[in-house]
Image 1 (cartoon, helix red, strand yellow):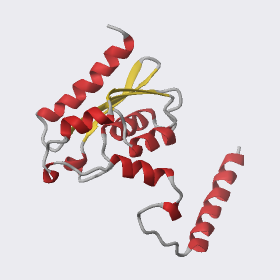
Image 2 (cartoon, helix red, strand yellow):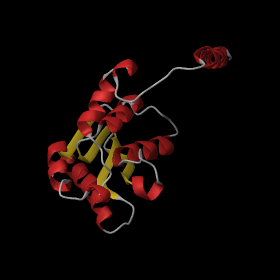
Image 3 (spheres, rainbow, N blue to C red):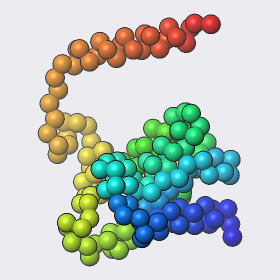
Image 4 (tube, rainbow, N blue to C red):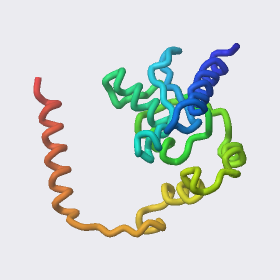
Length: 169
């Protein structure tokens, strides 16, 4: 069995836990650094009452906690299904260097498409991609800016404090 196949099998094995674990959904992932699994996750959105608790985000959170960092540059992510835009954003923010996935979004849609609407969380992948790809004024979600100067002041002060901490020997 190849290295990639072994790690992909682990991601799929994690996804299969949803067959026996209430509140989970069949999306599993592992984060790997230097050939070692450093983070694992399964979709726990229902269990955690958290729509961001996808397999990939949970694996990233697990890896970051174990390493004590938010920097996962040089790490690979193996997932049982092509990631949604939320998970892609998390991978980009964390610095994941390589992605491997099993089922495509189309295959997942086909497998889950027969479920009634009330039995699945309705993620419109195409809409999600559109929303993430456009500036705030071009999105479907209504948005209004308020108190931008107050928020900018806090951001600037935090940045100044961060710079001061870096310059302290």
